[in-house]
Image 1 (cartoon, one colour):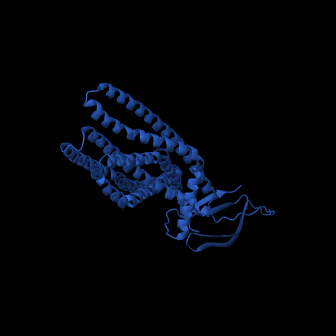
Image 2 (cartoon, one colour):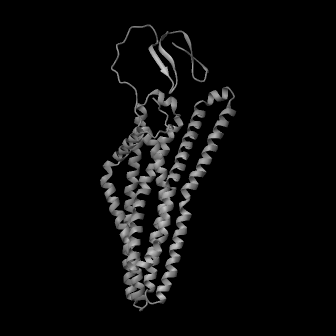
Image 3 (cartoon, one colour):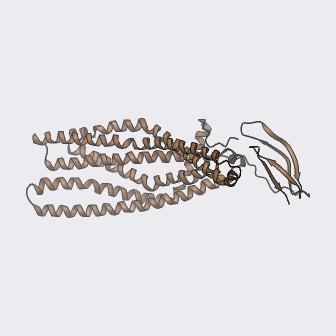
Length: 396
């Protein structure tokens, strides 16, 4: 059976295994439903309060400031203060709740990965480096923790604010609102085209991080042997190659993760320029007011600022997906170890006995077939490993 974690397959069985692993991930947060519901309510309230502010500001300008009714300005300013304080409290609440969800999910997921490793046979560890497995347990699971604790509710909140602000724009003035939102269509197309590329770049980077961790772990584990045989140059060369590969993939992943920000920033500037030009024209024709234009600018900001946040969150989401692909591949593996009862103990003077042992490397020929031998006390035996290096152990 092939236990290589880097072996990719597109078979239907592999897709079913990934789907089952995804269901296991959802099962990890199944008992967090109440917390997720409270966090969802908090973010909805926060988003609603954020959207009320521009309406109050625009009405204050048109109704009270232009008519110099400063008592109304003070009253609306106090109302805005209350709104912003409540919004701050709901934002803190959802951040605290989701932080707990992320940490508890991280704890459960790491336990699930480690327990899965206990079930897999020795062949699995022959085909996969220990450093890469450590990277999957520590680094890849932490990517999912960051998504659950930081990105998930920010993503939901940004969607609510952006959608609500867009509806307010269309309600205030349909032609101006449609013109202000037109750059978002280009952003949707750009995001859809680049999503797979971003995920692929992050997957390659996570793999290189695992390879680098594996090289470090192997060098440290064999440091005494390396020094004894004066082969530090060999391990230094291998580390340089792994480090260089990680450097190149990190640059590619960084470029992919940051490509959204300038594009989304450009779209925001285009939207604001459209509102400024079209809005001034409407004011000059008497079809718009200064207060409405300021409210319009606030709502445009509430559309495009969440879009900028979504750009960063989308990159984090792709990183989390890449990490989850590596974790789910491991969780979906099935062991071929047979569970047997306690075999009868035969009387023997041997320290260690092998009876009818067969062995073959993955996708290779059988190198041991039905081998039986016994190791006796007080004798020295030579065990030759795959590298050809002789290993001696005096059995007592």
